[in-house]
Length: 103
View (cartoon, rainbow, N blue to C red):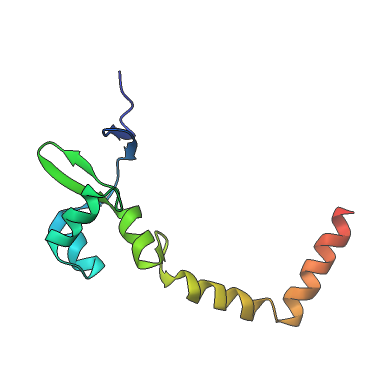
């Protein structure tokens, strides 16, 4: 019996979770449905079938738009925030204490 946490596709398993129709995914990605179909055919974008419908996993859309599932921030925005936080003296001192305690 197959696990309910994944759907088998031709040569991969796609996790069950939020997914988008071709029209929804195309809008989110800023491309046409026909371009999306071409990219799926070229195996450039992951997809799976849900009955007769072709679906795009949320993780694929987020990856293509530079977002994470837990945030509407892009990866670059997250990197910038981390960089700024790491400049705070309190954070630096906490990290030094933590490293010292691990030795």
